[in-house]
Image 1 (cartoon, rainbow, N blue to C red):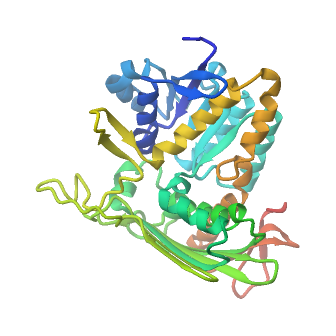
Image 2: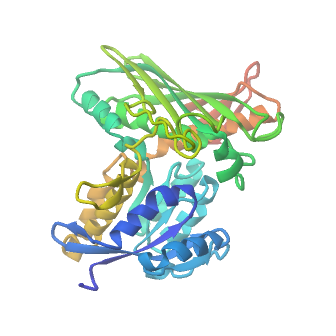
Length: 428
């Protein structure tokens, strides 16, 4: 093995997302390298694990340490992130309110980053990370795996080719079982909401597919939100059971588009699917209706469904499969998005002369589906939604965020009041 063809990687955040998507990728890549034109085989080596206390890392190493090459295990309470200097990239799948500091530390050290959605919680944080990425010549990406769902790829194809035109309105719902909020995420759910956690999947799908990727020159204009409390936390507190988000765009000719995105993480645990996902988009000349929990498979196993195994599984996202040639693997678009980052990172580091590396980086930064620089509208929507919900929890419901007005990039307007609160002063 050529020692110069090894990607040295670190992983921060070792919870559910890591176990479902990153871990299967690392286990497979530990057995076989990726192949990059101009570079040949490139080994991906997981050198360091970082979690809040280090206990999750200990459990993973006890089960998979040998297969993973026995990476180092560290607590993120150490702000220096031991071993960071020797890495090419840090991959971040912690709770979203911990993304910024980890990403900042990595970028300051000149390391590439891959961050789970949402990248950060404010445009101020995004600006700082973008500046560091540009200054230190780092690739900075965000994981939006739903863009790789085959149904969404087909939707984008139809939009891109002009077969369906000018989306006018839409609706999306994403409902998680209660075990998400009461068990898997219980340590960090206080003060949080399911909109930030999952609505961003559809926010990015809408913004990318119907905006950036379609060539339509629309602009984000307004954001509003409301929600319900009382199950995941107190009825008058700031922990939300469900959120209803509305985002509105305007075309240059004055036409507008509006999208409602409903999210919850208090569905009954006996629900037949892991997640309920439904979308409806209405276009100038078409409609698109999709239910991603009902794609043809219904399963009943005595004593197992619907608790241990769900009755309507989404095998497109992530599934353990036994291939016809008896190789057991995990496949799905949840893994594909991580593999794509590693392939592009290998191309950046090893896919040509060092003198041309900056040109390879510029080309990779142009991928607007995942580059940090293309995350502005999504982060603006998250920042506005969280501020609106915070005002609601403090007794001032009904605020609306206006985008790119004379007052600022994001300003809150309150019903029955002339007051406007600026959340972000620069243009979104």
